[in-house]
Amino acid sequence: MRSMIYRYSRKLFLTSELTKRIENRVAILYPSTRYSIINKTAEYLVRIYLMAGFMAAGLFLFADFSIYYAMLCALMVYAVVNSKIYGDLDKLEIRLLLQLEKFISDVKFRFQFDGMLEEAIQEAINYADYEMSIQGEKILECLRNCYVKEKEEYNEISPNNFFLTFYSICLMTLKYGDKRIDGQSMFVKNLGYLKEDINIEQLKRRKINNQFLGLMGLTLLPVFAIKPIEKWALYNMPEMQEAYYGIQGRMSTIFLMVFTIAVYKLITVLKRINYTEKYKNRLIEQLAAHEMVNGFIMFYIRHRKKQAEKINRLLREVVYSYNLAEFLLIRWLYALCYTGTGFVLAISIGVTGTALICAVGVCFLAGYYTIFISILIRKQILIMEREEEIVRFQTIILMIMHIDRMTIAEILQKLESFAVLFKTHIYELSNVLSYKGTDTFREAKGTTGFAPYEKMMDSFIACDTMPIYQAFEDVESDRMYYVEKHKQDNDEIINKKSLIARAIAFLPLCLVIIVKLIIPFVVQGISSLGINMAL
Image (cartoon, rainbow, N blue to C red; front, side):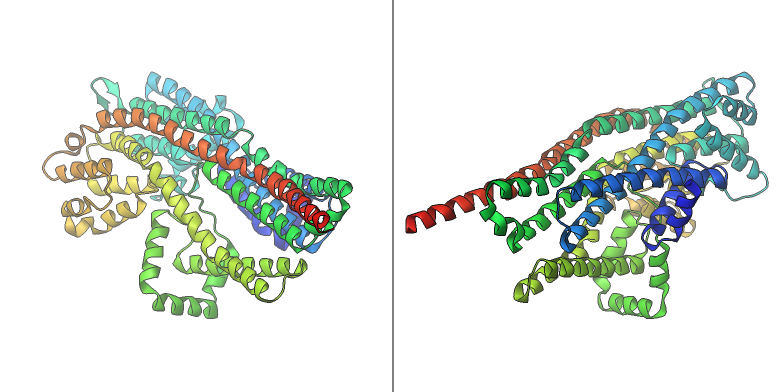
């Protein structure tokens, strides 16, 4: 049954990309056999289809079938299903983090006996939970392959930065050996740093889940009440037929459902942790590569060079999955989809003439700017969390600064693999380091306006006159400060996010009451009073 659901979901046009997206993420979080990945993907699909079915049934329970209402329900179900995918996969990632913390403790405990890393990992795998044992086997396999291959395969398949950090610590120890500083093993000390980072991440995720508990349901429930309210009002006052089923009534329903979708998506964005998904739609890639489409995009870029450069810089800053040409194509596709949807909705409720042109124009502009606005929001959220990235950099530097044969170029290479917000800066530094030397870091100072990052540049400059471990000797104390500061900042950021989410979560409920109950009854009452006075 599950394999049949998976097979048809892969083939059906409307669900093929959804299925591929889930499968790609499951393959990373759950790297098992092909059969297990398909089975796990099918489980998610079954849950999603059941939820979509119940939601659609709830929306249509008291409603008369119409084209405009069917389209609104489809949009609502799509928005919720899309968010549900991320929610379920985030839960699996949280469970993996808990298992990784226990796994690190087991490796650390066994390594202290004889210093045999591969044996310590293998023993920890034997006692690990199922999901973590699969990840552990993959880590051990990639570590052993590094003896034969130069490519570090695990960089491309790690579930998150914490798994990649653990892999890097193990790889550095295998390549260069463990070193004791002040009588303490650097491998064991680095694992301690990693456990601390994982614990902070768990606290952050737990607090976010607690703060956002129930807000999704509170946002969506008022939409289910729209049709029952209309039925109840018409049962008591049949003369309000035009107020609910005329053009104004249908327009108000469209407004309420679209507004609810927007609020729901915004709360989802505020709740989400990972903003750097690498998934790419193959259809978009194929369309962008098409000769005629690509020619049109290149023509557009040539005539809007400055704007294109700004957008391209923005896409690189937020580590967007698509390149500039693909982004512009997506923008136009969004605009066309919004325009087509708005046109069909307007025609189905009887809008014509100038009002139709205005409605279609508004839909076009909304579609054209929606994705750009979402990227700007994503950038702001990443900026709020940039200190977390500095702490991650400091962890990596502490991990490798005492290695005797370490170079600045290798440090930058490691930092680049863990970077998100500063990925573009690190990449540019790596490119020009070979012929500019430490002048690279002098020129980089002041480009970000972020003091912790600029202090890190000072340490790279100091590497020109002293050993690496001396140039970065303040990193450990700085890291301790930023870890504590980041904990407080996390609380502040989460509190701000939850306050915004709680405030806007009540808006759909308030608007449904105002638009569907108060305004129609007040207008009808005033109209009836006017008629009576005229008589």
